[in-house]
Image (tube, rainbow, N blue to C red):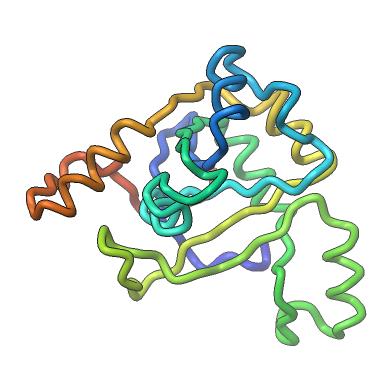
Length: 185
Protein backbone atom coordinates (compact mmCIF):
# COMPACT_ATOMS: atom_id res chain seq x y z
CA UNK A 1 0.00 0.00 0.00
CA UNK A 2 1.77 3.18 -1.08
CA UNK A 3 -0.19 5.26 1.44
CA UNK A 4 1.11 3.39 4.52
CA UNK A 5 2.22 5.62 7.41
CA UNK A 6 1.78 3.29 10.35
CA UNK A 7 -1.33 3.05 12.50
CA UNK A 8 -2.56 1.21 15.56
CA UNK A 9 -5.08 -1.63 15.63
CA UNK A 10 -6.19 -4.56 17.72
CA UNK A 11 -5.05 -7.68 15.88
CA UNK A 12 -3.78 -11.24 16.11
CA UNK A 13 -2.05 -13.49 13.60
CA UNK A 14 -5.47 -14.33 12.13
CA UNK A 15 -7.79 -11.35 12.66
CA UNK A 16 -7.95 -7.55 12.73
CA UNK A 17 -10.65 -5.73 14.67
CA UNK A 18 -12.38 -2.82 12.98
CA UNK A 19 -15.26 -0.68 14.19
CA UNK A 20 -18.37 0.62 12.50
CA UNK A 21 -21.27 2.72 13.78
CA UNK A 22 -24.81 2.15 12.55
CA UNK A 23 -28.39 3.11 13.28
CA UNK A 24 -30.54 0.70 15.29
CA UNK A 25 -32.24 -0.90 12.28
CA UNK A 26 -29.02 -1.85 10.51
CA UNK A 27 -27.33 -2.96 13.75
CA UNK A 28 -30.32 -5.10 14.78
CA UNK A 29 -30.34 -6.85 11.39
CA UNK A 30 -26.60 -7.48 11.59
CA UNK A 31 -26.80 -8.89 15.09
CA UNK A 32 -29.85 -11.05 14.29
CA UNK A 33 -28.29 -12.51 11.13
CA UNK A 34 -24.63 -12.30 12.21
CA UNK A 35 -24.10 -10.70 8.81
CA UNK A 36 -25.25 -7.59 7.03
CA UNK A 37 -28.98 -7.43 6.31
CA UNK A 38 -31.16 -5.76 3.68
CA UNK A 39 -31.02 -2.28 5.28
CA UNK A 40 -27.26 -2.17 4.73
CA UNK A 41 -26.72 -0.84 1.22
CA UNK A 42 -24.00 -2.81 -0.56
CA UNK A 43 -23.90 -0.22 -3.34
CA UNK A 44 -22.73 2.58 -1.00
CA UNK A 45 -19.31 3.31 0.46
CA UNK A 46 -18.88 1.86 3.95
CA UNK A 47 -16.10 2.99 6.27
CA UNK A 48 -14.15 0.75 8.63
CA UNK A 49 -11.93 2.10 11.38
CA UNK A 50 -9.27 0.06 13.22
CA UNK A 51 -8.82 2.73 15.92
CA UNK A 52 -11.33 2.33 18.73
CA UNK A 53 -10.84 5.87 20.04
CA UNK A 54 -11.10 7.40 16.56
CA UNK A 55 -14.43 5.56 16.18
CA UNK A 56 -15.52 6.92 19.56
CA UNK A 57 -14.58 10.45 18.50
CA UNK A 58 -16.35 10.07 15.15
CA UNK A 59 -19.54 8.60 16.63
CA UNK A 60 -19.64 10.70 19.81
CA UNK A 61 -19.33 7.48 21.80
CA UNK A 62 -22.41 6.11 20.06
CA UNK A 63 -24.51 9.25 20.53
CA UNK A 64 -24.61 10.79 17.04
CA UNK A 65 -27.64 10.34 14.81
CA UNK A 66 -27.47 7.10 12.80
CA UNK A 67 -24.34 6.11 14.75
CA UNK A 68 -26.04 4.99 17.95
CA UNK A 69 -24.76 1.43 17.78
CA UNK A 70 -21.09 0.49 17.72
CA UNK A 71 -20.06 -2.86 16.29
CA UNK A 72 -16.71 -4.53 16.71
CA UNK A 73 -15.91 -6.65 13.65
CA UNK A 74 -13.09 -9.17 13.42
CA UNK A 75 -12.02 -9.78 9.85
CA UNK A 76 -9.32 -11.97 8.43
CA UNK A 77 -5.79 -10.58 8.21
CA UNK A 78 -5.79 -11.71 4.59
CA UNK A 79 -8.86 -9.58 3.87
CA UNK A 80 -7.57 -6.60 5.82
CA UNK A 81 -4.18 -6.74 4.11
CA UNK A 82 -5.95 -6.95 0.74
CA UNK A 83 -7.91 -3.81 1.66
CA UNK A 84 -4.67 -1.99 2.57
CA UNK A 85 -3.00 -3.10 -0.67
CA UNK A 86 -5.82 -1.61 -2.77
CA UNK A 87 -6.25 1.65 -0.87
CA UNK A 88 -5.95 4.99 -2.66
CA UNK A 89 -5.65 8.21 -0.69
CA UNK A 90 -8.67 10.50 -0.71
CA UNK A 91 -6.34 13.51 -1.08
CA UNK A 92 -3.90 14.10 -3.90
CA UNK A 93 -0.21 13.81 -2.94
CA UNK A 94 2.20 14.64 -5.80
CA UNK A 95 5.06 12.54 -4.35
CA UNK A 96 2.81 9.47 -4.29
CA UNK A 97 0.48 9.89 -7.25
CA UNK A 98 2.41 11.73 -9.96
CA UNK A 99 -0.13 13.92 -11.70
CA UNK A 100 -3.51 14.97 -10.42
CA UNK A 101 -5.11 13.21 -13.39
CA UNK A 102 -3.35 9.92 -12.51
CA UNK A 103 -4.57 10.19 -8.91
CA UNK A 104 -8.17 10.92 -10.00
CA UNK A 105 -8.10 7.89 -12.28
CA UNK A 106 -6.74 5.69 -9.45
CA UNK A 107 -9.35 7.06 -7.04
CA UNK A 108 -12.21 6.43 -9.47
CA UNK A 109 -11.05 2.89 -10.28
CA UNK A 110 -10.27 1.71 -6.75
CA UNK A 111 -12.78 -0.08 -4.55
CA UNK A 112 -10.85 1.09 -1.46
CA UNK A 113 -10.08 4.63 -0.37
CA UNK A 114 -7.94 5.68 2.56
CA UNK A 115 -8.13 8.73 4.77
CA UNK A 116 -5.68 9.66 7.52
CA UNK A 117 -6.82 11.63 10.55
CA UNK A 118 -5.30 12.45 13.94
CA UNK A 119 -5.93 9.59 16.35
CA UNK A 120 -7.68 10.59 19.59
CA UNK A 121 -7.49 10.03 23.32
CA UNK A 122 -10.50 9.25 25.54
CA UNK A 123 -11.40 12.95 25.72
CA UNK A 124 -11.27 13.45 21.95
CA UNK A 125 -7.95 15.29 22.04
CA UNK A 126 -5.66 14.79 19.07
CA UNK A 127 -2.72 12.44 19.51
CA UNK A 128 0.62 12.67 17.71
CA UNK A 129 -0.10 9.51 15.74
CA UNK A 130 -2.51 9.05 12.83
CA UNK A 131 -5.63 6.90 12.53
CA UNK A 132 -6.66 5.29 9.27
CA UNK A 133 -10.18 5.08 7.88
CA UNK A 134 -10.82 2.76 4.97
CA UNK A 135 -13.77 3.29 2.66
CA UNK A 136 -14.98 0.18 0.85
CA UNK A 137 -17.18 0.04 -2.22
CA UNK A 138 -17.91 -2.29 -5.10
CA UNK A 139 -16.12 -5.63 -4.97
CA UNK A 140 -14.33 -4.72 -1.72
CA UNK A 141 -17.68 -4.34 0.12
CA UNK A 142 -18.89 -7.65 -1.30
CA UNK A 143 -15.73 -9.46 -0.11
CA UNK A 144 -15.85 -7.71 3.26
CA UNK A 145 -19.44 -8.73 3.93
CA UNK A 146 -19.36 -12.21 2.38
CA UNK A 147 -15.81 -13.51 2.78
CA UNK A 148 -13.65 -11.71 5.34
CA UNK A 149 -15.81 -11.20 8.43
CA UNK A 150 -15.26 -13.74 11.18
CA UNK A 151 -17.07 -12.28 14.20
CA UNK A 152 -19.40 -9.33 14.84
CA UNK A 153 -20.07 -8.00 18.34
CA UNK A 154 -22.34 -5.20 19.50
CA UNK A 155 -20.19 -3.22 21.95
CA UNK A 156 -22.63 -0.34 22.40
CA UNK A 157 -23.26 -1.01 26.11
CA UNK A 158 -19.53 -1.13 26.84
CA UNK A 159 -19.03 2.10 24.86
CA UNK A 160 -21.77 3.88 26.83
CA UNK A 161 -20.33 2.56 30.09
CA UNK A 162 -16.90 3.93 29.14
CA UNK A 163 -18.42 7.32 28.32
CA UNK A 164 -20.20 7.43 31.70
CA UNK A 165 -16.98 6.56 33.51
CA UNK A 166 -15.08 9.26 31.62
CA UNK A 167 -17.80 11.81 32.49
CA UNK A 168 -17.54 10.88 36.18
CA UNK A 169 -13.73 10.83 36.26
CA UNK A 170 -13.63 7.14 37.12
CA UNK A 171 -12.52 5.65 33.78
CA UNK A 172 -10.61 2.39 33.89
CA UNK A 173 -8.27 2.28 30.89
CA UNK A 174 -8.25 -1.53 31.10
CA UNK A 175 -11.59 -1.38 29.27
CA UNK A 176 -9.90 -0.11 26.12
CA UNK A 177 -8.91 -2.61 23.45
CA UNK A 178 -5.16 -3.21 23.32
CA UNK A 179 -3.97 -1.67 20.06
CA UNK A 180 -0.45 -1.82 18.69
CA UNK A 181 1.23 -0.64 15.53
CA UNK A 182 -0.05 -2.69 12.62
CA UNK A 183 2.29 -4.70 10.42
CA UNK A 184 1.08 -6.59 7.36
CA UNK A 185 1.62 -10.35 7.17
